[in-house]
Length: 371
Image 1 (cartoon, rainbow, N blue to C red):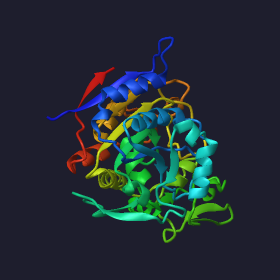
Image 2: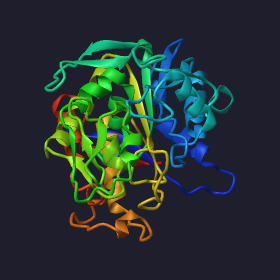
Image 3: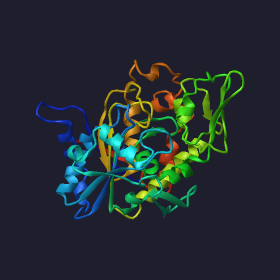
Image 4: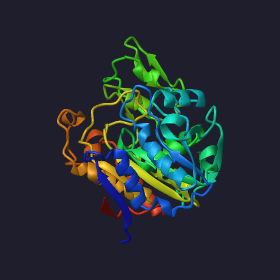
C-alpha cells in the first residue's frame, strides 16, 4: 500500500525556541520549498473564526507560512468563502471585519485578505470534479480558483455533521461559494423532535433562510423543508438535542461531497497542507463560542497529501487521553477511544477519507516523520 509522508512536531518548546520557529522548521522539512512559488499567487486557506469563538488558529500561524512563501518568491493572500448561515461572515464586508476583529490583518500576517467568493458570495466558478460521484461540477470561489497555488492551514477540531474538521473540510466546504455550500448540504434536511424542543427559539436565530417557524400552544419548532437548504446550523445551535438529520446517509453524502469539492479545488496545481492540533474543540470554529478542549494539545502536522494529514491528525487525537472536564465526560462513550464519534454518534468521519482516497485525492496510509 502506498504511503504519504506526514511530518509532525509536538507543542513542546525549549527556552529560546517558539512554536512559530518549530512550524517554520516543520514546513521546510516537509518540502514546501519544492514548490515553485516564483511570482505565483498563493491562496492560504484559513478559517478566520466566528467572533466569540476563541479556539480558531491565531494569525501568527498564518504569518509564519506567509513569510516563507514570500521568501520563496510567492504572492500569498489569506482567503475563505462566505457562509450560508446567519453570523458575522455571510458577506465580504462582515467577513473581513470579523477577520480583523480576530487579529487577521496585513500587519499580523504579512499578506492581504481576499474573500474567495466576493461581496455577496456569488463570485464563483463551476469547476469539473474528476471522478466525482455526487458532484460532477463544483461551485468554487473565483479568487480561490484564480490562485496558482493552494496552501491549507487548518485548525483540527470536531464537527457536528462530519465528525471532525481538518484539511478536507477546510478546503472542500471552505472554498465552496454560497451556491457550492448549498449543493453540498442539500441531500439531507433536519427534523425536530417536538418532545425535546423547549421552544427557546435559538435555532431560528441561526437559520439564514427563514425555514424555522413555531406552532401550537407550546410554540415548538417546525422546519419548512421548502426553505431549508440542509446546512445543519440549527443542529449545532440546539442545546437540547431536539434537531437531527432524518436520514442516516445524508451526513455520509456530505462527507463525500466535501471530498469531491476538495478534489475540484486542488486538481491541476501545487498544494500543501498544515494542520495544528491544539484547543481541540468538539464543534466547528463557525460557532460564535467554543467548548473546552477534549484532549490535550498535540502538535503540528504538514504534508502534500490532504487525506494523509487528516488521517494522521485523527489517529493522534484518538490516541490522546480524554480531558475529564470536557464534553466527553457528558456523553456515552460507546465507540471506545473514537473521541469525535462519541461526541457526534450520527457521524462517520471515515467516509470522507475513504471517498477521498477512492477518487484519487490522496492516501489514508501515511508514514509519520517526527521533527
